[in-house]
Length: 434
Ligand SMILES: NC(=O)c1ccc[n+]([C@@H]2O[C@H](COP(=O)([O-])OP(=O)(O)OC[C@H]3O[C@@H](n4cnc5c(N)ncnc54)[C@H](O)[C@@H]3O)[C@@H](O)[C@H]2O)c1
Image (cartoon, rainbow, N blue to C red):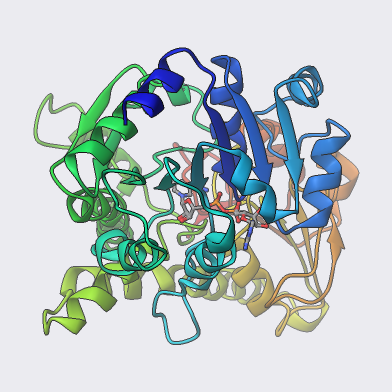
């Protein structure tokens, strides 16, 4: 362990990052900025080629930064056997759900199997992916032990969940306290020594299970509170009360209230997925997760409510559904990011297309909408200009990107369905809420 700590302290430690996506790339950049050598791995050839050319595909990591480091202290590869050349292996791999809403751990476990022949003594494996409690100690530890390593003595196993909040300009990675846990106390020491080189504050917890559940609690807290405020939106609309005025007023309480805002549903790789990792694990122990399931149900209904409101508006205005055109503003699942994974906008688009003539979208972060698993028809973003806005019978604000010109949208659209409370005071007769 002394040798590992020595290498960390004099920054000769080589970092390997497997999975160069929304989590892997910002993490790599943090290590690069702090003087470490980083070798990145990904199975996606397009990402590897793009990085090699110094072209960034993550909006807050600049291509200039990549070019400055590529082939100096940063390299990327598809060849997983190169893992034998690094000291630390950080797994930033997807942890999605399968068709039955159960954890799909094939990316994490499959990768550990494929790197197994190339693991060497004194390496450290760190899992950053979000997962259910017990993943590190009950699943990964036995895989490492089976290879003959003595974890805590000649191999180190760490779990440290990622807390990245894409699009949030208020917190840099280094400013977000990092939860660190180890399979043994030596593993914890190694993990802490590594992360204290790139973040200002380390929060050590007593076990990998605790760290795994901490991350899930954070995301479940969001999912449940968003579900609650979405339900409050429906209730207040029924009572004829403005939910945004209520939230703003409640937010003046200096303690005991945290504002959450309603929307068209939840998206991204975390909030719609992670809570069900706990549901699956709890079920194995015969424990129910009622809050998680209720919040999931309510949040899942929201895109359909938007569709219902949109169709009602067309009807009320005597517009023929079959001839109507709708523009959805924002394809990303949240403000100012380019991530459309699980985005409610896609579900809204898919549903509306069953009823109306045409559904287009505009998103400054997603100029081209690629085919997805669910959505097969690629589309191109429409420019938000007066003449284009006039083409549509209804404009739905699904994502409140800062770049949209909301006064132009208000002036030039026939009807607007605002799902984000962009127009706080509805002083125009063409604005409606969903
Ligand atoms: N995106 C976020 O904001 C965020 C925040 C906190 C935690 N997380 C968690 O971090 C983990 C990673 O999420 P992400 O958003 O970075 O996912 P991502 O899909 O953006 O990135 C994952 C990368 O792994 C690559 N990959 C898949 N299989 C591979 C393999 N066998 N070998 C090498 N590379 C492989 C993919 O090509 C992709 O580039 C997930 O568990 C997620 O829940 C994500």
